[in-house]
Image (cartoon, rainbow, N blue to C red; front, side, top):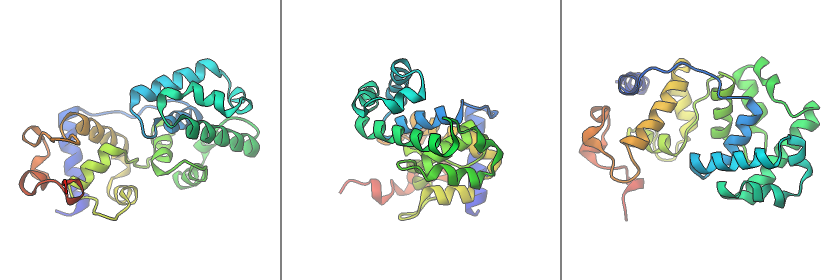
Length: 224
């Protein structure tokens, strides 16, 4: 069984476990971009609190740009790395307004996935994961984002090898039509079963497709 066949089998198994999902937009692309920047290096709860606080204190994007970075940082403090993220958000908003005359990314809908990817990845502090989230969850342009759960699981499964870029590998392996569902299923599986510490291999529906139950965790996870 090659890697592509393995991915399809994994996706089918996880669909049986977690159910089928139909794509639906999670929101405006610029809003999702800001939300995803806030999600960097934190959990969903802290991200959502920071985002709610930002929207409450700065209802318009223009007010974010015109305010001192320190005030924006204070508004998103619960999300962690708030000074860095505040500056990043302001710079992204300024660049969008300068290039397009408005705080709006809806023009990306008319571009190909590759073109839209290149438009987003050019922003400082916006990497492949953040770009992939905007493309996949707002615009229905499949690009497989790799978060910490997916990075852990794909290494354990042997899909991604040491030194490889997980985004490049997974986007070559995952069929476009499975991107949205497989991404979410892997995250759910990482939270519920394939945990960072003490994975529940005896309860795992894909254990027979994974070397961990018989060979142990990858070297990068073993304590020295």
